[in-house]
Length: 116
Length: 110
Image (cartoon, rainbow over all chains, first blue to last red):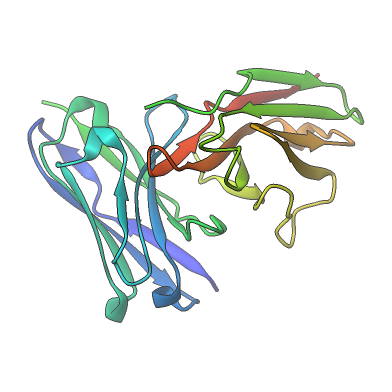
């Protein structure tokens, strides 16, 4: 079964850090670009970051540039999002999704809450 | 960061055909593929349409996508009560080097 499973969310204080993970299974992870998308409570979907299959192309939404780092380990079939200098406005459910040109597989999401 | 423009709400009666619009610009919809997603609040989005008008396997042919210039549309025919969900469009933006999502449309089946 093709599947993405996110983990690593939680409650963190403003200025803190979290590392999200997305474990892929059921498909050739190394052949696909990957994405992070978030959804704040009661709000719409917001793209966060994307990474190409071999990590040679990386893109970020402006508000997370310099604070978030996307990475992947194709040997471990895993995608990551290192989030530093977290702000209250980063509070959201974070989803990983497969392929910039497909968007066909999504994880169930992991919740990040930034609050003192 | 700017978004693609969708109407916040749409409605129709069972069996009716409804369309949801997504307006962008030459740097996004005008030059890149459009994707449509369906979401039950609190759950992960589901891909409905990819590459402007392609349906993934398992998506009923009641759902169709189209694009013209800098706008795109999602059409739902034979409206059913289970279609009462949120719908989002998305497209790559060449100027921003990033993905834009529409603000979302809440569909009500009257």
